[in-house]
Length: 185
Length: 201
Image 1 (cartoon, each protein chain N blue to C red):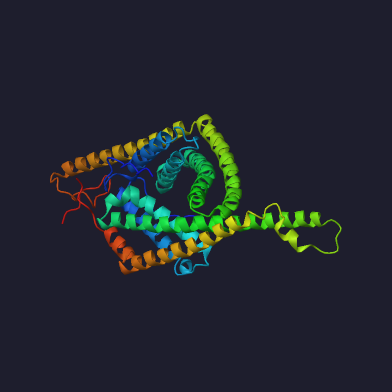
Image 2 (image 1 turned 90 degrees about the vertical axis):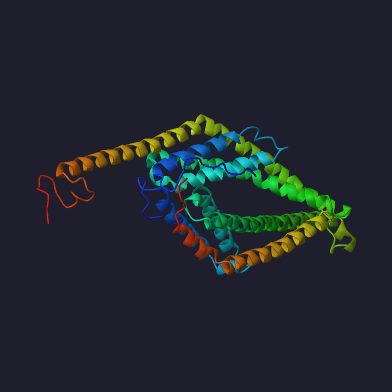
């Protein structure tokens, strides 16, 4: 996801003035993907939300000290969000690869069984377990099921975090913090 | 995961360009500190730390982009992204293998061969990822990425120094104008234009 360009940045003006614009833009980007990203089937939107959260987290990492104390709390909350979506993303990447390997092994077995059958009119039932990959299915199926279950569990955790994000008014409180000016030590 | 180092000397009033020079300087240092022994597949945390350092450097390069000369900034950002991609090519199979090992340690014997079949594939990817990373590190060295990052920092620093010198010069000129009017009060010369008498009420 391409980051939205932040307008009005000026190298000669104070860090806080520029950082405020950037944080606000990145915060809006995180919110842009809801409610769509809350649907477990909308994998792309969730992935984009993760990227947006990562951008917000990194800008707060360098600039939170320019604002009120809640900016640092928001940084931590953003990291929590980014971490859980990141783990969901790992499942989303891995699960289709496991399915692809299963399908690949099955096709190779089908080919091998067919060859074993020679020129027979029909396949003998006992050939069903004679594929070279027959012992591999169970582990891969177990892995696929585990990934699916873990994804569901992590998605529930994401929904819980997002609901807490709303309940705790993270967006409004961060926006308020952006207008606060800490004393310069 | 390595915690980001604080960027010392930044306050809300620090000019954006000066903050850019400091932030990029610290994040670039972090990146090269984490590059030691990164090709060692026995210690996968090294790749992780360097990858996170790359992301942080990329982030500050993007945040402070307007503070750098575009013709120097663009190729540096591109090279940092390339390095991040190469680190990802190694990191992804690292993480997947780690998860698979944890699972393999607890599943029944009958499930072992399937997990091993997938692990074989991941190990091959890890090896290929390591080669990609080795090439990217070599490219960063021959392309003098560290030096170009230092040049970016110097350019932002220079532009901040020039802006401050100009602001000082303007303030001195303003003080001179106030002294000429005799009152020295702020705003005394605000509504004058050059070669014009002070406007008095």
